[in-house]
Image (cartoon, rainbow over all chains, first blue to last red; front, side, top):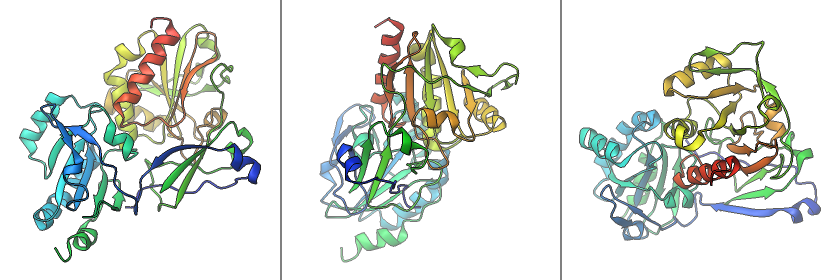
Length: 167
Length: 195
């Protein structure tokens, strides 16, 4: 499922355009993936730059309470089994409504199919303009975003096959 | 680059302009996203309204709708959001519930979406929300506050001061950013005169 967005029209001439104040720039498909630093579950800083631009990256923003994330997990697990040797799978817990200890316990019980990180500063949420949990971003080896999507029903095979071709 | 363009105080456009409703129904991404920002700015009197409400205990009495004017003298937080049971809205509402005492103590919080009262009851019950949810299916309230999206409310939060004027607002509240909740909490404390 492609991530939402649309052009709000009715820009009534140049006068309105000139009144516009440019707000935040949110990265989408074709843009360079923001390289930010988050934390692991022990509070240690983790620089996403150690993967972005060096290897394909699968990035999901998730929470333990997120039912869409739970619905999506089988697809993520299958994708990791198929492409985990060539793609770095990362799940960034958004920390909203998810205390660190609860996340740690949940991870121990569920063994999620990605490296679990924890962004209590919200750096990645702001950088990627994450509107909801289950938001997935796939980044190619060059560090360019090639897929974004939200929800419990997403398909990654085609795009992961593309970004891992010729590796 | 998906750009968000914010146009200030274009109330005349608010009703006609589609805006982002990312949470319930992501649409194919275009090259740009423009969001028309209108609604009362800080320092302006908050538009009055009444609306039917529900909470985790059930649907409120139709004879006693929520009334903003009736709450003058109290700090009121209006949280417009896209839809019940969607992941962004769940993140937002459950965080409000988790932090309710620290964040909203002494203030009145209401969530506002297009959902029916029956859906609100189920949503509030599922998350144990300790506050009311208002039903605004025709987005009449959202239009007054610049929160009207294309069939869904945009995620917008207002803090209304004791004097009935807008004390703070966030026209692009990010439900997944923990710092956004900190800013809101500080704004409520300031409006209550406790910061």
